Image (cartoon, rainbow over all chains, first blue to last red):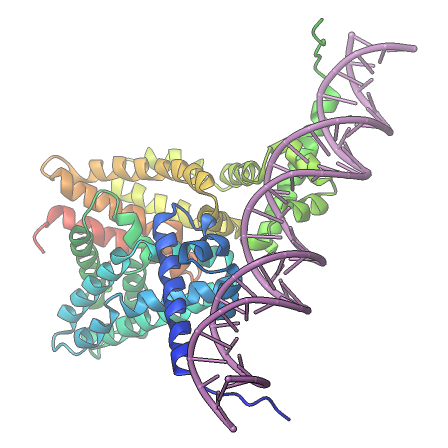
Length: 205
Length: 205
DNA sequence: GGATTGACTATACATTATGTATATCTAATT
DNA sequence: AATTAGATATACATAATGTATAGTCAATCC
């Protein structure tokens, strides 16, 4: 006879609570450690007050944990504001707003940078991050299509999209952040995006 | 009595030869493997036909080997042409040439990208790479100072320098390389740099 | 209340990688 | 012929990921 499975509200709630605790401890470890190299399951488990095996039970692997942290950060990172930005009447203002939102996202939690570092050592995790980044690309593409109008060649559009995509990426943000506040970086990226868009009207130079 | 040390031309030549062989095998491994994660000293040693201990004798550590590979690539990457570029009369043309040289450098050897990935897991190696990147920054700074002339504020210069620095970085190059030839990326980055420089004359928008 | 079940724990083990220590081998140099 | 530098062979320490197995404890079901 098959073992009768049953649901347990109190226990699944407790499980969800420990899961949250582990994710919290993991992102804290990422934030405080100076490098992704120190990010071991042992450290995280101890920080969360559980066993390393519990982490495996909940997330399956190191990558699973990293992806869970990534999801958590994306949920609380303010990216939901993108919907409002995309709905703005003026597409150029929408792009400015988009830059603002992403600057906020990149700067809010230093764990974001560590997660980008994790892409180097884990190809599958890199793929997961890349997929989520495609959302940013789609947003940029939609806005630039609205800005460009009809008379602009597809190649010029692709150039503009890829440039703005690169300018709003985390590596660019991190590079420009040396010696600048979040707002200063934001304004600088906005100006650079405007300049990249200028080529849409005047593709000569 | 102290042991009498003596030099041995034939033997140091042989040592240099194996050293070269290990570096060659290491960069080949970086180029062929799909990720830095597979880059182990064991693999490299086997590919070079030596023992893992020989690698330690020559390079001291994994990071030592990576730095040696980095040096090798920098030597044969065409960066010596930068001196000629910097000596050009027209600083804008010099900047174009600089972009060209770096696009060539980033694209010549796919191992460059893997080395950038290694920065994530090895903070000290990251520092070594960063130091060498400062040479690019100094070049950009010198050119922009010549382009800007006297009437431009230091902050506007810093903005221009940091933007051009970010635009000529490896992450930007890698991002723009999807679906573009090396020359196309080069032209795109050059245009973006021109646009970033436009803010030097007109700091209003 | 007693059996069962799910989350967590304890312990052990396999594997892979870096790095260190010691003794040995070999060919070039004195 | 003795010495020496470079390379090897072998062994060991450490740390990290991941798997396997048995055990604990409280919540749930009958």
